[in-house]
Length: 65
Image 1 (cartoon, rainbow, N blue to C red):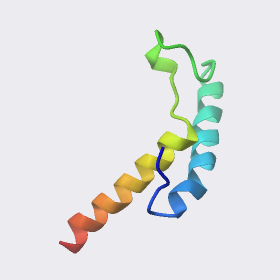
Image 2 (image 1 turned 135 degrees about the vertical axis):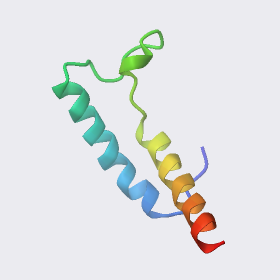
Image 3 (image 1 turned 120 degrees about the vertical axis):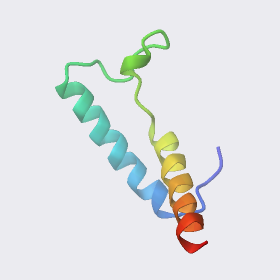
């Protein structure tokens, strides 16, 4: 997996992943779940990092023209 071009994406990803896991636990879910149970799957820190990176660059392209 590639490193994010937006450096802060990797910084916040573990925090967001932990926050999502905490919400899943409070809702009574088991956390990561299995492949057959897509309703309980949570993204890992690497996936969140990529999402933040893509969203950041997409917003710049739209805003900056």
